[in-house]
Length: 557
Image 1 (cartoon, rainbow, N blue to C red):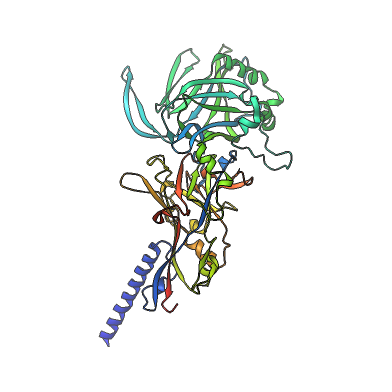
Image 2: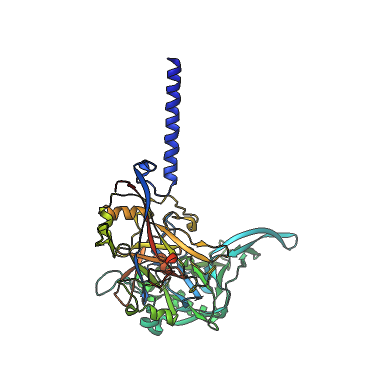
């Protein structure tokens, strides 16, 4: 009896261990939750079904760019979502990015004090940078100072471009007067709709701008009551820092100090109509340049002024103050996209076969292009030798689906391999812009390192030993299950490049087919592009776009 009980306990523990291990392995197997309990049964067998989706491309003529600050990632922070500069894509051509933004004072109805004098106006725009190391450096008189070495991030190219900063005279309204909805601003508005007012007053120009990774050293002087002058030094991370010329300072004195107590400075609405914004313009230099990603709300204009200070002994003294204008509310990107003419012609609607699909799929960020995919848009020959709609055929099968994935091979004959290839692509509901259910259930979420996030669903680029991109693999198992179970409709899907797959907001754009087409925000803020093989007859069989469905079925079927 004791032996029996001992064996029974061992059997129970062993069964429990096997169950835990089996559960763990099931969780580790990407999305392989359906039918796992019958795999290996002698009455069932594993098989693969391959569908050939219909896919083609659409090109945008313009995209909405005043919604880029809505690109909040899942930890609630705003990533660098605006671009500035010149980028030459090796496949698609040149894109030029400029920024127009409203500004808002940190203080309304400012009191500048008695006998106020505007000493300087400073524009600052921090770069995205990473501290590499900090060392102590002697600066004289046995005094050392901590000096930090930085690496600039999100900078592409190292050639100079022409940078100009203007005070804009164009009024950016919040609401569309024809509908009372929020006003939509597009990538081409500055060049086609706003006119010369956007370049109202030139504040600064640099004919050969290249961002520097050097720290900025700020020196300030403090005058004590006894007349002693103390100098303070401060080091800040790399940034564009411009101290405007005297004639610009004189203009700001008129605009601000001379307007103390006025209605223009009394509330936000009046101020936005009075001081209408700052335009940061980029222009190619010798047809080239560099481009950077920026968190533009970090930019600011600071007015440094001095005024008579009150003293206990009525002696003469001066004090200092500052008024900061932060970039806020309406911030938009101007994007000039000079598409390669051959690709642009190929992307004309009349040259895209939306019924049978295309051999090449063109994906480009910014004012670019994306692919349209119909997973089950064609017919198949069924078991009776009859032509049948593929989706109807699949719904009739008694299959337990273990995995469904799309593999997009890169057309290496049409791309320049290497660092310019996008690391990620993004699939979405073309009607709503929403992510697929597989995105929501993907456990590989990584907010701190977006490049490693959602990699089960949205696989990173697979490269060969030479660093050339070979393919992207996208798992859509749960989505396919829901379609076959009539929980979802078989709607068309969109495929785009993505700068950050944690950004799941959408924007809109206009194509030759229709206006207000949905496009992920992460595509608009992406500068890269690629060319993927589609399903056209000229595509090599081994590279053709396929939907691979792995399933378990009864041997009796």
